[in-house]
Length: 75
Image (cartoon, rainbow, N blue to C red):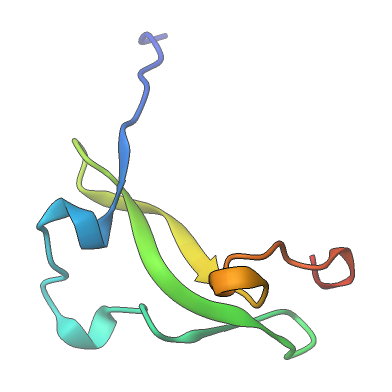
């Protein structure tokens, strides 16, 4: 088994990189749960700096400055 590596994640917005096809950029789109409830809006993408792959979405949701926790009933 190859040794585990640690990925370095950076926000796409801070990386200087762009998404090749603008229509595939999900930033600004709303995230819905299985019941169709709005969980928030994609604020940024966290990318693996070396692999140049998206690993996580950062979702803005209510609270102060839009970074409050997702209520337990909506997880």
